[in-house]
Length: 336
Image 1 (cartoon, rainbow, N blue to C red):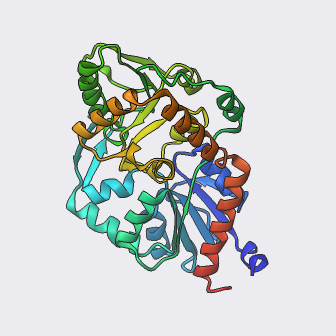
Image 2 (image 1 turned 180 degrees about the vertical axis):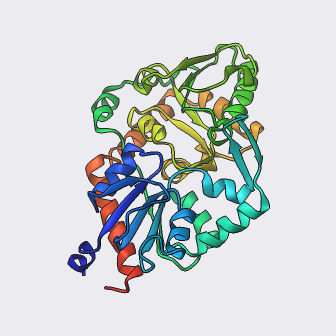
Image 3 (image 1 turned 90 degrees about the horizontal axis):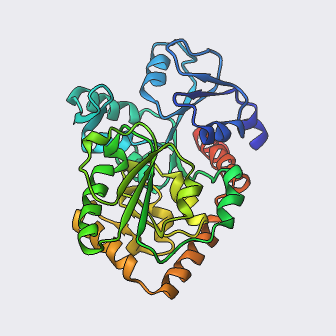
């Protein structure tokens, strides 16, 4: 069966060209193009990075093979935003209500998708909300091989009161930066020497409150930050996964995430209390609770996180992705 499926002509259609997603695609095809309205014809399967409505529309219009199968990779906040009926306006850099007609058509096209690969359980659950029948699988990203050894060598400073956030803007809603900074301000009231470092570019600092102990560093290697802090925080609202969370785990630095962060699945395997609701009081309480833990418990937590993170290496993850992808194809084409 696998040989028959391997004979299918597969085209990877990318939008953001994320290097991890490109590596995923290269396990099943060497053919890749950036999305446009003039997609190449003659392919059996279109594996699309995020987008799904446009390729389905092209198929309906017979601009591509009418029998082609479309599989989408969901690794961004689009399903979460659809669920909340909101969207990010990159012009004004603000969230706005999603037009009703856009929401209706988005849900309609989701039902026509032939298959889905979901980065993390959150995206899988959201996909199943609107499409209960098409085959779908959960996959996870991997830690950069270039960074892997560097992270393993870190001896984390587990007992200071320094927090790291790592992520690029400008969509602060997805990254949960506004709520995190607000929570940090209250943490600072209880823990006067607390500090928080923001790594990542494209943030409009004027949008955030000025808080003592808060510092923006711009684009900077996360390895440097993880050598200095005792906690990484990612309070996402639709964050598909968050590879920096795996980086932090491999460095042995504990992580607190929100329920709206795809990496919640992984954190729960170690300690579910580090997955918090999107409520400021709960975020503040968790951070302060972590700071007050005994050094022995922090060391044990660090060790457990690092042990689990080792499984998220490139070789293992790509092998799993290829397996899941062909499982989906097998279900689509009804082959055992």
